[in-house]
Image (cartoon, rainbow, N blue to C red; front, top):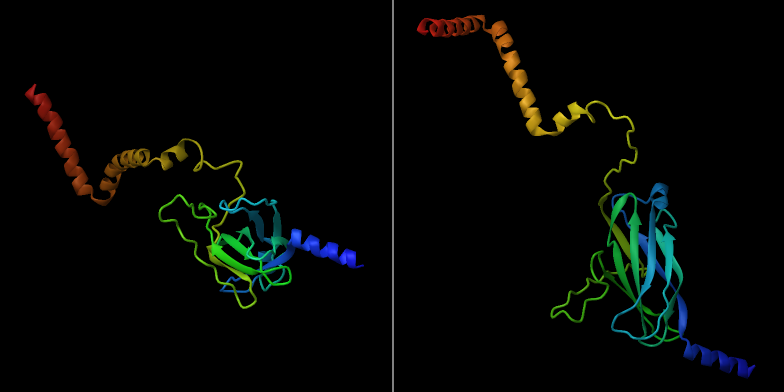
Length: 234
C-alpha cells in the first residue's frame, strides 16, 4: 500500500497536470438571455503556446454553449499545468448570430500554485487581427488590456450592437426593375439623366400648351417668323 502511494506521489510530481473549469457569462445588458439567443451563441476555447516558452505542450480545443437564461457557460475539465509558477495559455473565441460580442477574443492565462492549490486565472482583451502575445522584437510592444472577472471568478462577455439583417433568400426571377435594360438605366446616373432630359424635351411643349396657351402660341409664331425670314433672305 505504501509503495502504491509512493508511486502516486512521484507521478504527481513528474506530471503536475490537472483539470480546471473555465467559466463565463454573457451579459446582454438591455434584456435577459432568451432561448433563441442560447441556440445561436457559442464559444470556442483553444490552447496556445507562448513563443517565449520552449517547453513541450499539447494542442487542445473545446466548444461550449450557453447553459441557461442567465447567460452562463463553462469549459469543463480543461487541462492545465498546476506546477508552481507554471503558466498555461488559452484563447477564447465568442460567436453569435444575433449580436456583435466583445471582446470577440480573450487571452486566458492560468498560473499554477501547486497540486492542491487553486490556480490564478487572468484574462486580457485580445481582439481579432492582433497577435496573441506582443512581439519581443518591437521597441514599444502593445500591451493587452486586462479583462476583470466578476465576483464568481467568471469571464464577462457583453455586446456592442445587434448583428445586421442577413438576407439568405435569393430571388430566382427578378423583375424588370432589377434586371434588363430598364434596370441598367436605373443603376446608371448618367443614363438616367439622359432619359429624363429626353422625356422633358418631349413633354415640355405639351405641358406648355396646356398650362400657358398664350406663351405657346407666341413661341409658335416666333418660330414661323424665323422660318419665313429664311425663305425671304434666299
